Image 1: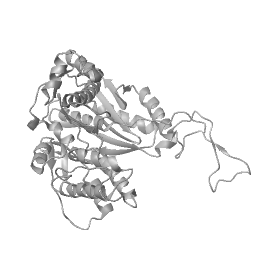
Image 2: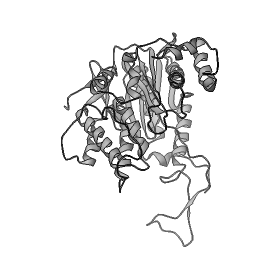
Image 3: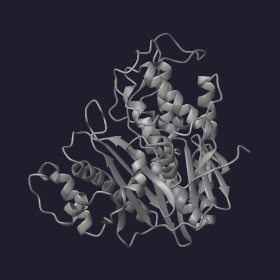
Image 4: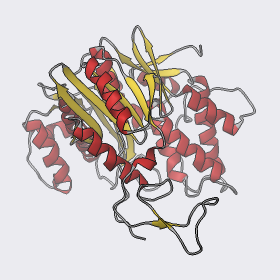
Length: 433
């Protein structure tokens, strides 16, 4: 009853992908460390009592007053993050204003960067001696586990090859497939059937939807390294409240697609530049029920795909220009954040970031900020995108719809088109060995 704040930040997955991409281009070593019994380190600000644990001798009516956080307390996560922040700040690190779980320290010999996700952290930078000293200092404050070179982090497998770092979740996929126990070994080339349209009234409601919801949650986490299933997962996620047999069949099709692409990895090239570029697209009124549109974008750091999204827009739009402009505003916001994040990591973007769009009308509105009846209802998005265009944050080159990579995140495609688009995402198939 006696607590106020329970929220504790964790590292954003986009930050982690960006950090790995930068580290490999700079040839920085990436270490991984873990904290044992992490929530026992937090200091409590509230007065909390608990019934003594079984086996602890005590007089009748006596209770324990907690001096430290315990597992099970709602504020345990926040207490731990606050304690870690105090310790790491005392060692000369500062928290990035663009990701609270990212800590950076500039030294005479380079920089040290830490990204924290609850009890797991990755450490990189070009100050090798400083990193060694940091590990010793952390071990003096907490009970630490030095896990060596980054290999497996939050279910993400990280492998090094001559071409770059490879990020995959093949073991996670295997666990999902084992949970379902598909009776056949069939694999498909596309996660969704071509030209399929899904509604809440399709099929018969599942009598026990728990497995459906569990699998969809697992698939959402799998999109960390599998952008090729982002749109399909976006579709099946809309029916978790009342899934039907048709939606279940769609989930099974995604699993069969994963069976054929289990060892496909996201490639972060060692020869990549560190220049941002983005693709923004939208599917106008693609939902057959509410006629809302879908925003899709993908952002590259050089050749490495670091950010993407497939999300239904909040409002119904009356023209394709409007939906494209809303998508451009969403993509612009992500670009602005990434430019700030990269600057805090020492990777400046001196030139405007190109955001490729295949709608000439939307591009013209950004170039000519004249508002009229067709645009006044999206004026905020117009002003936001125009502002960053005029201030040199972005440029808006036109791209043909046939070459628009973000199209992958807005609609279902034929197998041929799907393969063409996924081949543009810097993904690499590797052997199971």
